[in-house]
Image 1 (tube, protein in one colour):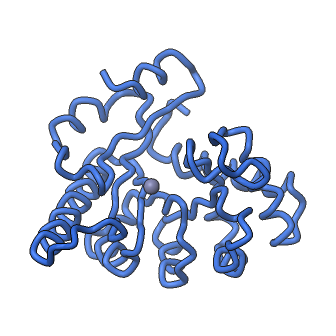
Image 2: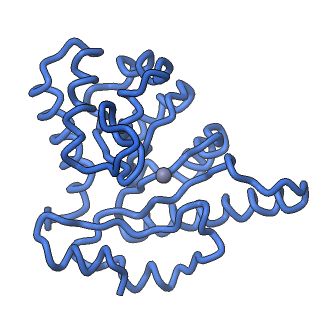
Length: 220
Ligand SMILES: [Zn+2]
């Protein structure tokens, strides 16, 4: 049984998501999703999505890889709709294709989170389609100008905080293993930029997270 499921059974406050990341598309098997998705601690489908950052160099291989990524992503969107669980979406250098797929396949029925939101303004309109924007440690980095500039354009009721552990640890712990504890540095940075009290950011992002993941579950 996958490790995440064991942890979720051992600790009340741990839940898990089930999905295939674009780097692992060759392992995609809907039967495995079927097997665990109805577990009472499974609250989302993901990470799934598109990642064009590490594509094969060979042109034919590249086209095939992109095609396969799209198929696996679409299959997981359809699956999420079937089981009525929200999506956790990974998008890297593939904003326009990912957005088109989310719209064409009516992903708004279940919604989800654009995890590690890449600051692409083209994706902001997804906030009208039941999508939330996950902000991680990157927001505290010196080179995060693009993300800082776009923060106030994200509707407050669609803002989420995330770890993406073990990487992307916020400043001043950048380079160390990331921990949920460090999300407070993300909250502090966002509160400075949005000129809101950090308690307010904490409570609104918690409320948003409950809303997103609770909408299809009575277990949270
Ligand atoms: Zn990711």
